[in-house]
Image 1 (cartoon, rainbow, N blue to C red):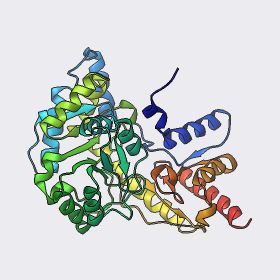
Image 2: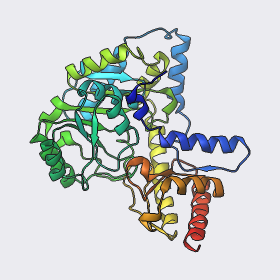
Image 3: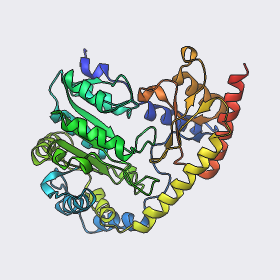
Image 4: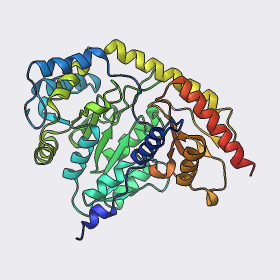
Length: 387
């Protein structure tokens, strides 16, 4: 049997592969410290879990509208109307099976085969594969993303751009001047924008996270905002994400969803409604404080590790250090594999994010695991530097 050339061209998710390998070693009895996870290590807050349990007891276990229950769409539209200081309607909202699902659907209906899409480096691992799966061509800026690179990409035929702040894998939060420059440049083009805001509530700056729509509200007509409850409320397994875009973009993505997955899990939608309505605000704030403290802890520990350099992240729950070794001799896939096998520490190679020479370390782990994991990483690097 011959398979689709498009499907054969896709690269497996490095984050899922390495996390699976770590779990396999753990099951075999190895003492594994996972600093690779892209999910909170907290339980889902009780008020949210109870909303899901109530949905089961009340028989809310049948098909819903394929684009999501009206109550959740109304709550998301209301929340983001306040957050972005602009008016959104339920018709602008699509509830999907996780933010990844929304991203894939929005990309699929926005591009034709051969269309170019700009992906700033380092990018989340799935962006290029989503573009390729839709017949598009991912293109990457020659330098760090800026206004000039956006204009250059538009001049080469790019039809859209994906933004992700706070960033996975770097935890980068843009400054006002940075975001203003990006917004100005995009406003001069005809490019559409997908803004992946899944980490929007995990920022450690009092000033918050500048958004493209803050500077050019008129871009709302060609900007899709994607978020969800997974990172903020420790609900990764519930699989609920949502997006807000112009009604036509949302409608087309909704048709695609109806013919692929139908509706997201009904029970999860009712649980997500409790989250969006603020019924676990106290728990959300407690988790945020914990991540903030862990961010400070891991950076303090990494400061004492020879052989790498890093910038302190202002958001998400990742640090993205650069390994200080000969780039010609460095293979971060091999580095991470050896680290896992020799020291029992799981981190993600930067090559998965289009940034060879870096590794992604998650601090969505207990303080004890962070301390032990960074100690083992330090010992591993010490051996590498002295052999």
